Length: 353
Image (tube, rainbow, N blue to C red; front, side, top):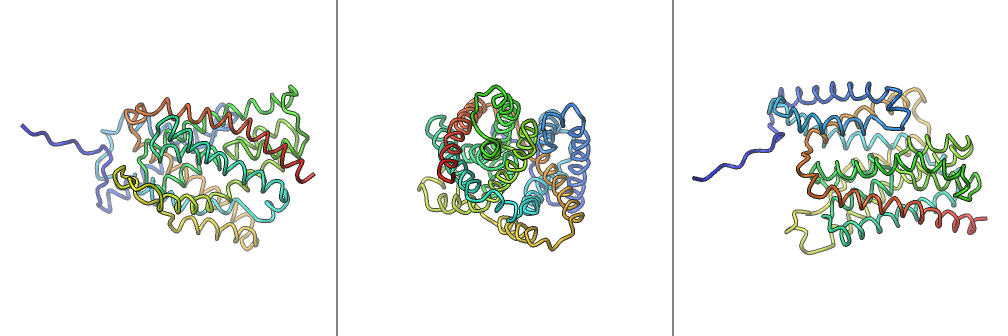
């Protein structure tokens, strides 16, 4: 007797009421997540609402998913896809060209070299050494190279990969980024890292995963190092769009077996150019500071909603298949960021005096 395969737990249905209910549910869930992330015990660790969101969403999606009406799945899917692209575009309001110019060629060079080398190392280690699929390797590499969870979200939206792959990448970059946030200042204080204040700023901003981790780590060194590191970090964030474009061209013209693997072509939609446009708007100081601050707060909430929805669509059974290999890829990338990042900073400082 033939059996009918069961539908995914969150297979989208397209009723307007159901979609709106699903979006509202995710919003309320993200609001609760934001309150949890604001607790001193969590915020002091530099853990952003985005990370709490994907963990809480995954716990709900795997433990209580049968309590979610099927008609709401379209709203969850909308939050994890369409809302995500809008939120990534508005992330551009956090970057300005004037700030990036403050660190000059040394900051730009460190950012370029760290991002390019980490992507290459991550793809090689993930695909060749750990035998991960292309999307998981690329998401893990992008999160380590550019801006942590936000980069994973941007690439996930462009690749349209399965949610559990983004969850694995986020888990990897959060784990090793958090460890580095605590270990970097200790290494500087112990004299294991021999860099001046500018070098510390270049190294911390050039190699730590999340913006919050950069600020948290360098605040234990000096205000000047914090300023330099933050600008270098935002330079890496600005590289998100050109990297998406380059990777898009590479994937579109690469291996002939893409269709057999279900990879297809990477989509580089409007949100990438929206990101660049809003960087220019922020650089021209057209908008009042209070408005930009408000928009950035709303954008963080939208990103939290997207991350929470991705967590709800994630299944632990899928993560278990490649979880250890993805984590090991992240560990190797973190070692590269420390060793290779130090070598890059030393070389750049000698080059630019």
